[in-house]
Every structure is written in structure tokens, then in C-alpha cells.
Amino acid sequence: MDTPTHISAQKGLFLHQVTKRYDSIVAVDHVSMLINDREFLAIVGPTGCGKTTLLRLIAGTEKMDFGHIYFQGKCIDDEKPADRKVRMVFQEDALWPHMRVFQIDYYSNLSFGMRIRKQMPARIAEAVNIVTNRLGIEKKLLPRKPDKLSAGQKQLVGIGRAMTIIPGIFLLDEPLAHIDPQHRLTLRRELKDYHDKMETITLYVSHNLPEAFSLADRVAIMQEGKIIQIDPPARIFSNPANDFVKDFIQCFEM
Image (cartoon, rainbow, N blue to C red):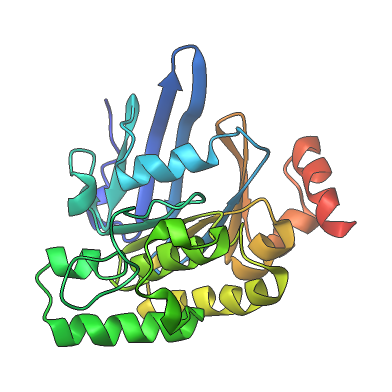
């Protein structure tokens, strides 16, 4: 496959003709785009358009059928998920069911990433204390296992687990879907503040258009596995790429 010759000097996350098929279904269809260093990109589109699959391809939990992915000029196609500088928060919780939310002397959901990286206990305790305070995870929840948490509590723990390790790429798949509306606005601000302070690249998948458009530097709109338009929110409103985009964003204005 021909690859761009300028990639070795390119900062940010670059997807080149990324494609994923499931039998006859093309979930991601030759997607090429550059997400700039430190950019917050929201990805929106109808259910089944390929948003989550795209995140999983970047994370390495799904294998591409075609294309390349580069991060900071380096091709990461063959890197294992654990070796990529990526942290992902799933829409549905992906917590370890046998582990407590947090315990200092053993593997737990919030500390897992830090323990496998052999962080010192004091550093682990400090990082967990920071994220639990930021996200409003109550101390009484820390000894519990996931089956004793509500859907919203599980989602908070999933976000917190990702935030304990500073990522190069932060992937968020409907991270606030199970959060109550009152808490949701606070968490949106915390996620944006985390992105700004950590100077990471953030890709944020959401069906909530006001949320996506208010957080993002740019928004990518997907349809049937393709990126139809990728622009700052104001430009999408003022100059939609086609009738699909125009119709899709109308629900934002209703």
C-alpha cells in the first residue's frame, strides 16, 4: 500500500484509508483524517455508522482490514493495545468483575493500569484520590465490586481508571450515557479540563449533539462508515457539506 511520505514529520494522530469489514458490512470505509496534537475531536453520526468501531481500531482492540494508523509520525498498526499510548472509556462498563473499585494493597479497577506499570503505592493512592475527587466517586464505593454499583457508578469508575494513566490519545465512547443530567454537566467540564491540562488528543463519541458540539475543537460527522464532514462546530452550522449533514444537525437546533 502506498503511504504518505510526510508522515514521519507529522504531529498528531493520522488515519490513512482505514477500513474495517464484517462479512459484507463495511463498518469503517477508507477513513483518512488528521487529528491535530492536543485537539479535542467529537465524532457523531447515526447509530451503526462506525463511530465505536473507529475508536476500537485506533485502540487496537479491533484489527483493520486495510489502511494505516500513525501517532506522532510512527506507524502503530502492529502495536498491541497495551503498548499504544491510548486510554479508552467504553459506553458499557468494561470493569474487572472480580476486583474492587479500589484497594491499595491489591489489584483493583482504579489502580490496575498503574500496578501493571509498577507504580509505587503512594503514587497510586495519590492518583486515585485525585480522580475520585474530580469525578465525584464516593469513598463508600471504593470497597465494592462492579456488581454492587449502578450503571452510572460503573461508568464513573471506567472514566477514573482511564484518567489515572496520562494517555497520548484519550478515546471516549459515550462516556456519560448513564450519568444523571445534573452530574453530567459537571463531568463534561472535568473531561474538558483534563484534556486541556494533560495536553492529550481526545476523540469523543456521542449521540448528544449539544454535548459534542460544546466540547469539541472540531466535529467529524460519520455516515455509513465514512467521514462526511470534519470542521469546527461553527463551520458545520454555517456550511454543512451536504443535505445529510444539514438534516442531521437540525435536531441540535430543535
